[in-house]
Image 1 (cartoon, rainbow, N blue to C red):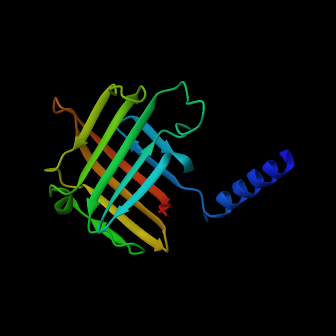
Image 2 (tube, rainbow, N blue to C red):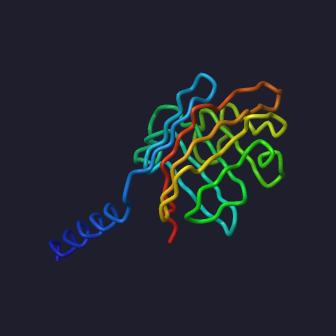
Image 3 (cartoon, one colour):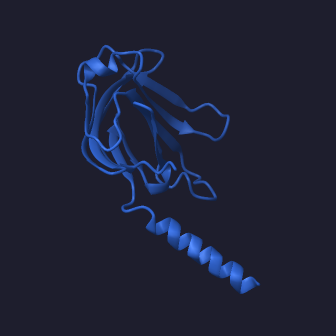
Length: 168
């Protein structure tokens, strides 16, 4: 019986690893922070004609969780069409339907981050682009201007991603 469970576990693991064509990645320079998220730390959720993309510091989805600081980037907007390229410029991000946030030093479930920045909707240069779409896989780039509650600004630049819609 133990062998059966071991075989089933190996088969499930093999099926889950082969179900995804390529590992996900997301990188950006956020102020003076080199932000990087790995395959298990990224989630794309398409919702009708909109999307929510969230990413956290590489390794944060592992168990046990890392002892280092965990940062989080969240991007959401509309005009998403599954399997299609997309260009959202500063005019798109000025609308109330689009938002971006970056949290630094998230301490864990239910705890407040050390700092939070939100999208500066009036800034020119906010941009999110899906440059390649193939089935449920997407590649692209982004740049944003963010502000904290006190008005301190940071720039998210050189953002790049390879992501996949892994929803059932």
